[in-house]
Every structure is written in C-alpha cells, then in structure tokens.
Length: 309
Ligand code: ADP
Image 1 (tube, protein in one colour):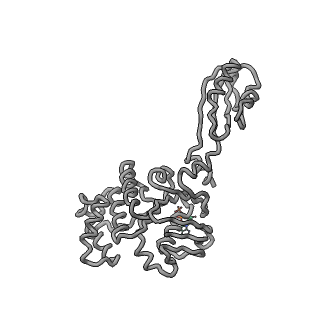
Image 2 (cartoon, rainbow, N blue to C red):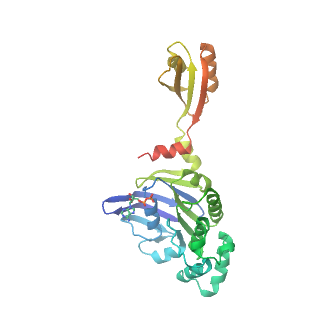
Image 3 (tube, rainbow, N blue to C red):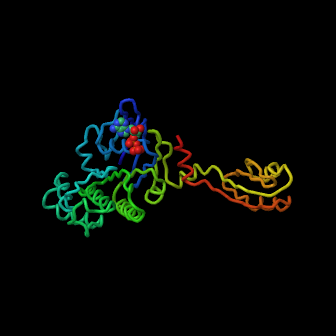
C-alpha cells in the first residue's frame, strides 16, 4: 500500500533522509522510531506530500507523491508534531472548517462530525473553545481533523509528546482502536510507545534505517547476550579463571577488587541461564556470594545499541 524506494531528502548540506526503502501493508500500525534529528518528520512530510523528495520514489496506493499529490492527500490524514489548531475556534466550528477544506459535501458534514466525536471521544468538549482544552483533548481534536475525510492512511508525528501519563494511555488506546481499520504510521523517540501500540517498528538513525521488523523479530535478532554480575568475598586470586571453566560462559571481566570483595561480569551464550552453576561453584570454592544479578538484553538495549551515534 505504501512503498518507499531509495528515498533521500536533503536540506542544503544536511542529508536528513539517506536512501531509505520500506513498505507498509494495509492495516499495519508501523512505529517509526529514532532519536531526535533522525529524519522521522522529514520522511513523514514527504509521505504526506508536504515536501518533494530530493531523490527516490514514494508511491501510496499505486500513486506517486510527485505526480498525484492531490489524490494522495485525500487518502491520508496527517497529525503534525506541532498540532496546529486555531485556539479561538470552538471544536465544532474548527472541524466543520476542516471538513469544508477537505471538500466533504455539506450534507455529509453532520454525520462525519458525529463520527469523529464518537471515535475521538469529543462529546464533552465539542462546543468549547480549542484554547481552553487540555493538551490531551487538543490531541484528540488533532486526530479528528486528520480523520474527518475518512482517509485510509494516518500519519501521526509524535502523537503523545507533551501529554501526561493518563493522556498518553488514552491516546495510545485510541490509536490502537483506529488502527483496526486503517494503516497507521506513527513516529516516536520513545520505545515504549512502539511496544504499546505498534505491530512493527522501523528504527531510523541519522537518516538511515538500522532495523525493520516486528518487535519479536527485533528482540530475537539482537538478543545477543545475557550477562550475570556477581559480587563475592574470597581471599584467594584466580576466581575469574575458575568462573571461565563453567560451560557456556563466553567471557569474564573482573572489576577493581575492594580487599577480599571482588566483582565479576560474566557474559553467557544466548538463551542460557547459569545462575545455579555459578552458585554451585561459589559454594564448592568456599567463596561468600554477596550479590548475583542476571541481565537480559531488552529492546531498550537494542534501541540504544543501534542509535548510539
Ligand atoms: P526527527 O523528526 O527524527 O527529529 P527531522 O526529520 O526533523 O528528524 O530532522 C532530520 C535532520 O534534518 C536534522 O538534522 C534536522 O536538523 C534537519 N532539518 C529538519 N528540518 C530542516 C529544515 N527545514 N531545514 C534544514 N534542516 C532541517
């Protein structure tokens, strides 16, 4: 449905998006994940025909962004990062105004408005001035304006930024609900946003795609290592060598000892749990085990590894 092929976008000397390709299927909720400045907004602006690409091809439902921008805009709803709303307007007047701009026939305005009130939960605030609304409600109004013409595709730039934790949960639930019927691309620099909302994630860093897959795929692909750290009290030297003899231990690093108290980081083959073997060794050797902690690579680690610059 959306096909991005070798897309590059430069701003003078800055390469904001660097030769990226990906596809999005109908009905998918795709998270576009990356640190600030990664190129997410720029990509979204090209997809929504706000800006032409420097090179490459973007087709949406078979239409090209360079040639069919008007038809594409009818298929797309866009919530920009700085949700630009007219503060002095009432919600209802604003949504009527957007319906007008979108070319929706007058006789359909009421039914589309009712639908948006329903889907976005705007009933309570429909006659209020936008300037008086909480940020969460303003974001709902932003979603309503993006969907009023019933587009097949929704592109949401940082849809929960600046919201409080309760509002974040509400907007995420709303996006998930909307995603049952529509294709959604949302950008975020927060991993938990993707975990809470998306089927698939594309991780972008410095204009390039560094990973693309379902969350399970990403975790599996980068689930490279498990690690156990221990602190022991032992008078003798040579503990690291003994730890290395345990099967499936890949590497043992020793921290700076504090007298008899020694600290080790033990890297272990993927999928193994050696806590019992390590415990048994400390007992056998007569070391006093003061602390044992197991770390498993999380998606957060994956994201940090991929985007550490
Ligand atoms: P993100 O949305 O991931 O934070 P952006 O697409 O906004 O990233 O920015 C990507 C890069 O392009 C950044 O280096 C940013 O400074 C630069 N950039 C974005 N917009 C402009 C602009 N209008 N003019 C010049 N450089 C820009």
